[in-house]
Image (cartoon, rainbow, N blue to C red; front, top):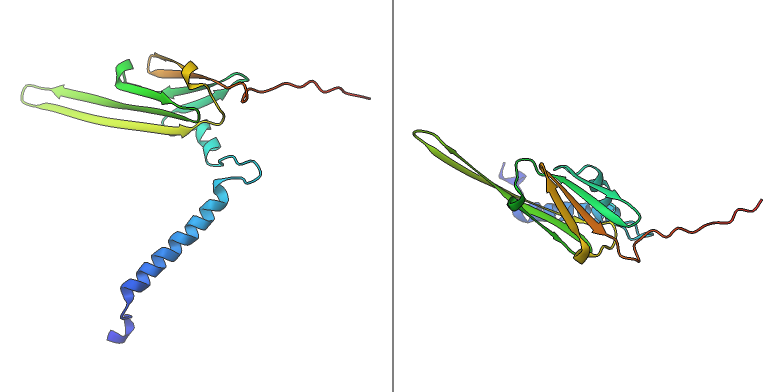
Length: 154
């Protein structure tokens, strides 16, 4: 019966774990980016329905991000933006007081997402009203859509 378990079973398990990790890494790398465009394929679908109610609209001149933050006040979260990244982080504290007991709870969150184009972070604007955060991120001149009139012959 002792012959059924390899002497170096831990080494075998470690090698198997490494093989699985390597295989998954190679598979993931195939889908990480589209070599022809260089765009991150994982970023685009997340914008349309992000788990916490984050939405993105894009115009020729700006990106408009809307985040649903129900139950939070203006001072319960922070927004940080750079040329290629938007971060929303916050904290919710609640307390309940009854005659015999006092309860306090705290929950924090943070979301960081890659932006689909270059923006001007110094010109970003944010508005918070009734639990809805709206962030306007002006695009750089280079990122703005350029309209070219095409002459039609016929």
